[in-house]
Image (cartoon, rainbow, N blue to C red; front, top):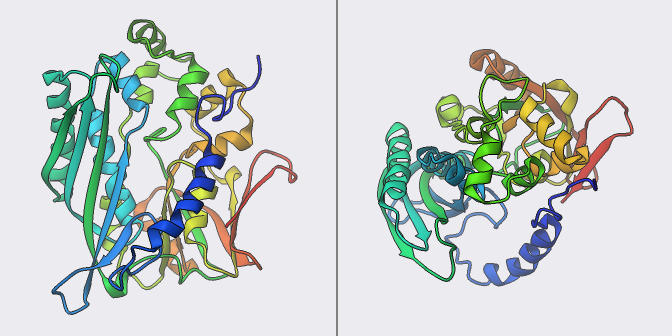
Length: 357
């Protein structure tokens, strides 16, 4: 069997990155003086009107991806709504912002009232817990675009932050430490590769049988493990956002640790991450084993057990780690000519994955 990769599963991250770089020039031609940061962060940052330049709005938009196909086969959809809200709130958090309101977009071939109600219930519950208003959305029935029985769910969240408290990584400096916080599973990224590795075809009946398997290392079936809701880090970190020792935050989504952390690394710095400092959850090992996926591809596609990263002064990171009672100090910041992230993994020093911005 040829080893699986994200490209073979239908997702080309390199091509997507190239296209994003090309369209960035067009995007930036629309910027006004109210746009406070360049594109590429975890949210777009815009000066809030009528606040005497004190506040900024932060907006993010995303979808849940092919995790919806797992939910379809398993027959449980409420967690997908939770996923979308938590993913969005984490993106805002990475900029130092807390959520204000949320809108969703649901598209399908033909409306299934039961599924839509489950999704809305999940989104509403997650929004209530965050103090975020679910103020509206759009429901589209698009036969011919979507196959019968399938759907897509996307959403836009807007939050607020004091302008002097925007977190964009510019304060990151050599000597800083890196704290990694545990994920609850795959979250909402890498499902195209995970599904291919586990033999999920998209047919609900055959996929259901595969998802009922209980791995030897777990007491839960694969369906439940794959659908574990995306963890929200706002409750953990909201009280620390105003602390001066906090220099950078990164939400670990598609692209893994390297391609998400590098988004906030300033010139002259390298973030050195040692993947041997935390235990890789068994679900990722199962996916890697079944698909014979190269480890560098695994770290590039999945969060590998680290869902959020905090970078700051050593005294702040050590104290935050103690207060939270979870996570691992997984790296540090050094000087470098080019902003980059270096990830070391495995048992040999020559196993290194480097992403350069």
